[in-house]
Length: 192
Image (cartoon, rainbow, N blue to C red; front, side):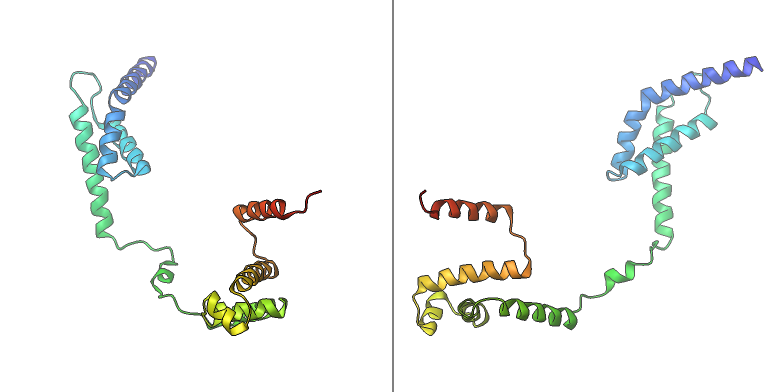
């Protein structure tokens, strides 16, 4: 009993040395074979060393490096062949990816209802400028001619109309816009 425990300890020491000497290079080799899949590479290296532990003489009389690399390569090839021979595994939701995107009229209807309600919250001047520029597609100069106001007024109303619409819709402004608004407020504030 004691003799076998000593032999096991010696095999463990030799195996630990084998791991220290070859595992890093073996892992790099397998990682390359697997195209960079870290987890599968670790599994293959572990299985290779386990097979070495079970089947090889660890007395140190022969170099195990060529055997380790050959077994690792064979494990990668066997795994590849197994995957190619079996049908592809599915998780039950793969068919959703195959469906073509379909335009949903319900979403369009809901969006139009929300936008209509938000536009009713704006002033008539803001609504008219938004209509002339965004809905009809006119430029600010063309909208100014239709509305009978200066182009600068159209630009100003358009800016404020979009900002008011964002507030009504609950759209959160980006940090850049928040800083820009604060800077304008400081720039345009009356001197104390």
